[in-house]
Image 1 (cartoon, rainbow, N blue to C red):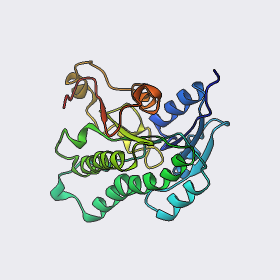
Image 2 (image 1 turned 30 degrees about the vertical axis):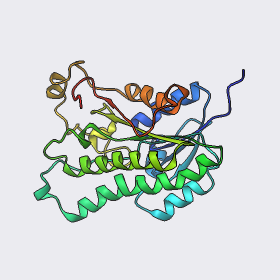
Image 3 (image 1 turned 90 degrees about the vertical axis):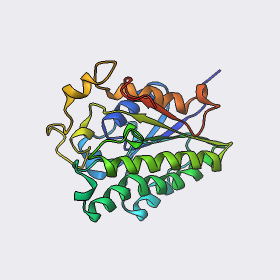
Image 4 (image 1 turned 180 degrees about the vertical axis):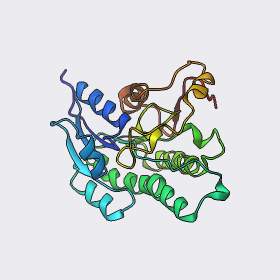
Length: 246
């Protein structure tokens, strides 16, 4: 039988994981829309067959406008997120707290609400949020980022209960992935700057003895979007090479 029409929207699709996900989705026959910061889309333009939409998750009007004309979609992936400099909570300014929570959690909340009508237009579908092992594997210096991702796990579970049975909502929780995110994020930083992570020390603590790459995260995302996970909702898949086993 011919494959049913499928459309995927990827928030943060110009980033390292996003670009790998776009390529995989195209190979598998999805129609893809990428939503990202204008600066990110300029630096990493999607393939010509992919529609791109500029969005700023700190701006409610920008979010509303980006999803207004998106049309019906079957799958939505939220890869958006960024991390500020590592520092103890006592040394963190309120402005920095507001920036991280606005971009990582408030924006994710508003985007999730905005995409629900698009999924309902085709009778339902699946949402995959990208969280982080730091949401539950607490480490000093990562307080703001970890808290924002912990909130996203709670958001994922709550939405999963409230929008079932037509829409499934799950999450993928990666460990550190070798992308520009470790240097501040696509569109927000010098992507060629040194990583804030001690890579050698990190690898030495990881049973699979390497850093994750973008494709390691793409597979679990595609699984959660597809029929093989049709009885899963409200779950988080931890992808970390065995470095953290909740």
